[in-house]
Image (tube, rainbow, N blue to C red; front, side):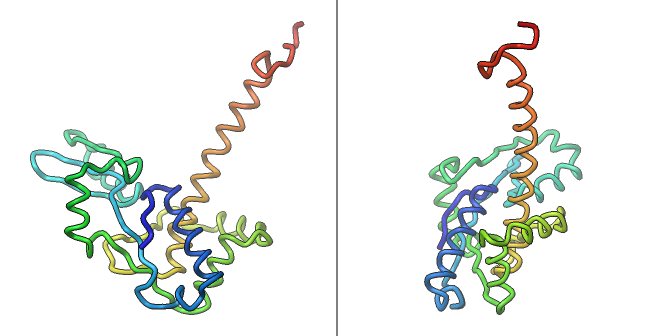
Length: 190
């Protein structure tokens, strides 16, 4: 069972572990029920004793649209596994069936998707894959299992999109900071 944060970085870690097992122990990769994911919330909304738990930011954002931006709800964001309280962790383990997701091997398409996501030689294929991705798709954690194909297409592809979205503002900021003395360069007027 892979235990990683439920955010985009955690999805990448899960993908790397799946890639490792697929490469070195392909028979285990294909074995039904062997590869599993421990599922924890990314966001929990609470109001008057009622709580809504979300396992993806996509699910949470859709809920916010339907609830006046979550107005009147207390929102807790889970940065990682360490954000959960001891009581919450005990709840997760008491209901392990609800907090675990099996990876399902359905044939060579799963192998192909893992290769697409991690093979260094397939960078151009990866660009096409990311550009063609459905931004509204996500791994449904209410199910008992997810295919490797769906995990890569819905879990890892959203990670790649978020990585790109975060890279462009950082590049813009760096280029603007380097226009002056912050990067040790003389300004244009000196």
